[in-house]
Length: 287
Image 1 (tube, rainbow, N blue to C red):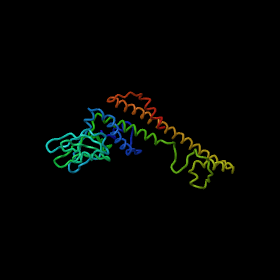
Image 2: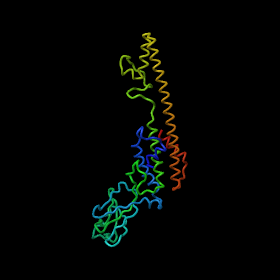
Image 3: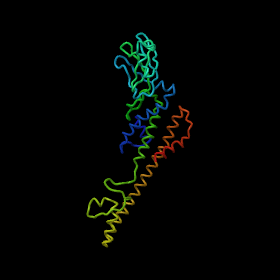
C-alpha cells in the first residue's frame, strides 16, 4: 500500500481538490520529525544509520541534511582507526607538522566547517574514511511504500504526521462562500446600474438597484430583485452550513490524528504530557 493510499484513508481524497503537493511535502517533513524524535534511542538509531565513504573523490561530505554523526573511522592502509572530533578552529594545530598537536593517519580527527565534514589526514585512495550518520530520506514520495534506512514499524508515525499537517492545511483553505469575480454580500452598499453587466454580478450593488426600482415605483422589477437577493442569501447560508460542517469534520479528524501520533510516540518515549490540552492549545493557536 502506497503512502498516498494510507494518507487518503485518514484525510479522504487528495486528488480533487489537488492536495498532493502539500501531502508530498508533509510526508518528507514526517520522516524528519519521526527521525528527530526517536534517533536518541540506541536500538532505533542503529537501524536509521547509513554510511558514506570518503576517499580521493570525494574527500569531504556535506552535512546539510545530516541529523547526527554516529561514528567516523579512517583506514591507515592496513586497518581502520576511529577518528576523534575536534573544533574547526583547532585544525591548524593538527595539520601543522611543527605543532605538538600534529596528528597522523594513526590518530585521525574530524570536524565540521561551514556545513562540510572534513577528516584529518585527508582521505585518499587506499586510505578511505567511513562516515556513519543519520540522514532522513528526503527523496520519499507519495507512491513509495517504504523509506530508506528507516524501520518499517515507524512508518505509521510518518503517515500520522503527514495526515495531521495536511488536515490543518485543508482546514485553513475553507473560507466563507464566494463567487469568483464578484464582491461579497457583506460589503458596504455600493451604487449600481442594472444596465451594466458587471454590476449585476456584484452583490453589494443589488440593494441599490432594488431601491432604484422602488423609487421609480417599478414594483415588478423591485420584487424580482428582492427574490434574487433572497435566493442568493438562502444559497449562501446553505453553502456556509456545508463549509462549517466540513470544517468540523476535518477538525475532529485533526484532533484524533494528533492524539494517535502522540500515542504512537509514547510507545517509544516517556511523554509526560496532557494530550488533550496540548492538542487543544495547538488548535487555539492556529485559529
